[in-house]
Amino acid sequence: MVAETGAAANVEQIFGSPESTPVADELQKLTSMLEALCPKDSIIRFEFDGQLRLHVDVRRFEEMTTLEALLPTACGGIFHGVQRGVAQKHSFFHRLSAVVVH
Image (cartoon, rainbow, N blue to C red):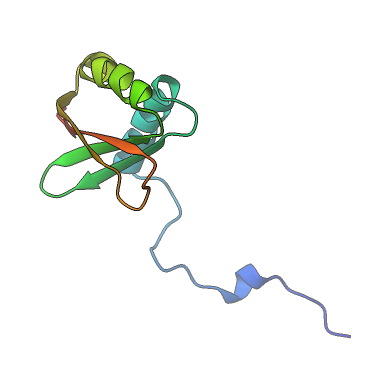
């Protein structure tokens, strides 16, 4: 009978250390703060394309309008240029996007 040594011993990490990074830590803090403001089934994402952008997908139009009013003052006012849009890959969601300025 062969003893199992654990799969982790045979797997190498692809991305170096498993430790968190300052950027990941800050994004997690922002996500946690936004989760408190957003409806529970919201999808919160960040995207970087030269500027850090926030995308929040919500199900109901009423939720979007409430969140649209709250975002500019949330987290010390770091969300600017809030815009409405269509959620990609989620046809029943509405999307709010904003530039994150710190």
